[in-house]
Length: 438
Ligand code: ATP
Ligand code: MG
Image 1 (tube, rainbow, N blue to C red):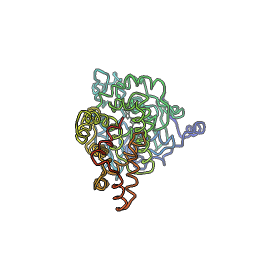
Image 2: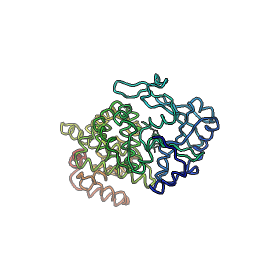
Image 3: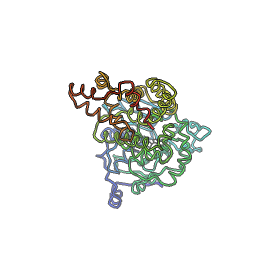
Image 4: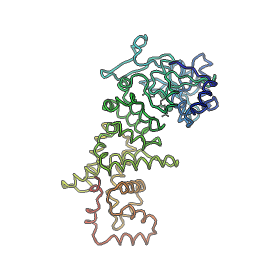
């Protein structure tokens, strides 16, 4: 349904529904400038998507996107620092200092066969869109967006809100609803299933029944998505501050196993499940506290039960612990990389976190001292605490390391001496973490 909502109208409605006020001054200065520049040049322009949704919910938008009827090559010359990017969708990035405003040209929905431009659109046999650069009208642009709450447009110059997909109703009802026929929209782009879950978790909204229904069956279609796009998406899912809620929904909708295939077994085991929960909770907490986070930590946790299980098997078949661990990491990584890429700058620290799990029990002589000095010690220690907290039996190893870090040199020497008479060899065998994984 087509709706133009002037601010007067929406004020009345706001009082009814608790929707937050939106006004031109709430729009980022650069985004407002972009809209004005485009309008002055004779084009239509609006801020759109997540920023309008978030403002209406009283949240702080992550970034501001602009939609226009100007084609990318018409947009670019209007801005001093702008470039056309993207293959699948060509968009313009206009840069203002450190901020980038994304300017997208209206696109027609996938099924607009009648539009003369439909020859630009390619669909694979399964219905997936492989190329989608058809320009459309404002209304068409709204209807090809994913969720109703993401299809709201705001013109800061006239202070007008445009709602073509009943997005305001869904913001009021706190509902995630796919525009159009959900199954068709998921087939066009399976990543939309992940997006539905991501926004449900982020906003605390309920996924509408019809939007939710096809997901479990269509989830395997994520296998058609490139591993690099899935990795990018995984960062948004896991590291946006609502990782725990997102993880739980991904499980509920059978999407997690598509993203992390080897997680399925670990996920049913209470220790593995607990470890994931703790890791997500830890990451969410750090983000809330403004601390630094790294994808390596969460990914190391998600794959840990598999690494531990594999290493245990290899050791049982006679491999040395060090080799077993490395081999297990290779296998698990190999399987995972077929699904999501994980850039080396993250996979390397993951391997180190795992490797250090094998070393942390070995504290004799000067080993403990050398371990504390390792660059990745802190992450490995945090990881060890999570493992213990998740229920792995590690004989108080985490507490030992906590104490060790608080002691002076002499006390540290005593702690190492007190480790007992078991001797390094025996101790190593007993304390290897791989065994206790799951
Ligand atoms: P946030 O930036 O807060 O994560 P967002 O809603 O702005 O959320 P983006 O990924 O920045 O999400 O996308 C901008 C807009 O583009 C969305 O609001 C949505 O309207 C549209 N969009 C993005 N991805 C898709 C998709 N796969 N299918 C259809 N529309 C999409
Ligand atoms: Mg956005």
